[in-house]
Image 1 (cartoon, rainbow, N blue to C red):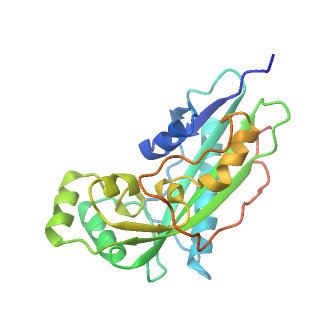
Image 2 (cartoon, rainbow, N blue to C red):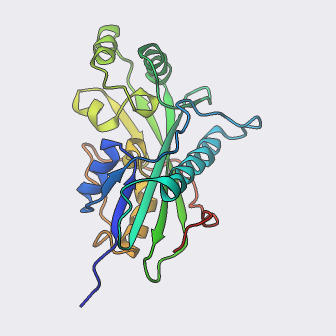
Image 3 (cartoon, rainbow, N blue to C red):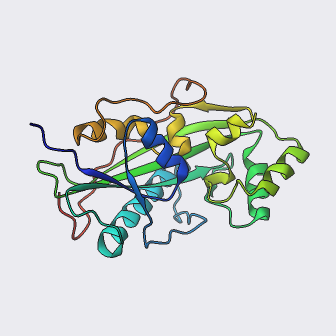
Length: 244
């Protein structure tokens, strides 16, 4: 008889990430990390390629969220489990890193900068297996997609801002929510990376850990187009205090 798979713990309160995992057949529990990441990402002084810089930052923040929960978080399962944390950073057409708006004015400024021009959305996922026999060490996965949001009419933008649906969303919007509302949004790459998880990179690792039966792609409301940019999978040292 095969052993039961470990419990998947999503170290994120993002409804979009939780929905992605559920559509793929996962049944995670969602927890909050004590780590408070900055709403607006701080770019390094030597930015270099902004998309790669966003990937490095998203990976670091995802790792810190996982470690903070492992060290001080609540609702830790009693048996073997796998913690999955994530972070998402946008890069606008001018190469500026964009995080999550904290006010309606910030959301308006972000949407004005992103709509009508290509921007990138970079998501990182970090996996840590605890008490899982034969599990690999902690791993991070990073992926980027290029996004084009059609220009928004002023009245449509203001109606959206008044709805408060921008709260807690990187770049001020959620891909599936806005497509369902009729916005024209084209994605080059993995749409799940725009939603909040680097699924193409992450799914094989979830399969390896027995958390999904195959490597399904979460359903999206429109098919992705050809990939234009991909960030490599990173294999960091295990966080202090973590065990495979």
